[in-house]
Image 1 (cartoon, rainbow, N blue to C red):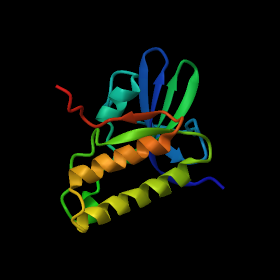
Image 2 (image 1 turned 180 degrees about the horizontal axis):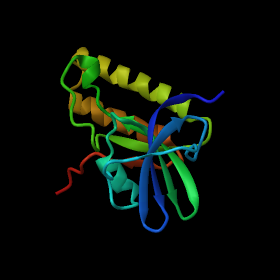
Image 3 (image 1 turned 30 degrees about the vertical axis):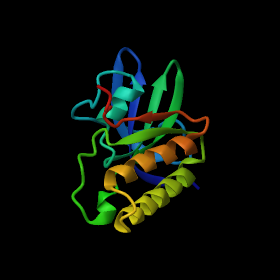
Image 4 (image 1 turned 45 degrees about the horizontal axis):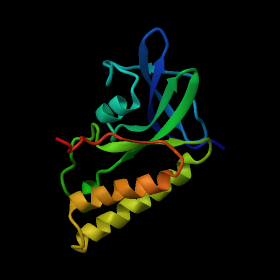
Length: 160
């Protein structure tokens, strides 16, 4: 049985860049039929990095990305832990990472990620780290968990 969750952004190269919204299915690596057009495109480029930098991580569960004739599903991992602390939320655009997933593994990865967020939030509550440190630890844990999967960090670069 397919797990159906929230929204997905679809980005496809075909006579230019097309973007639309659809439903996210954990068991699929390409978008299901049916689409809803977007009032405006979050990104005018097909670069996954550019998509991640502008993606509303609070709105989308994932991204289906089509390039060079191949579909890839990416789980949207929002780095915000503030909601678990009762604090105001930061702007969700670009505040996360996209993790490439294979068919059938998105649900388990999402459960792991949510557990990791609760753990780092607990560390903040216990005074063991700051929110910034918790977010960095979460991104580092995602990078380790990614293994051979592609991980695209959408957070703003701190490089000068």
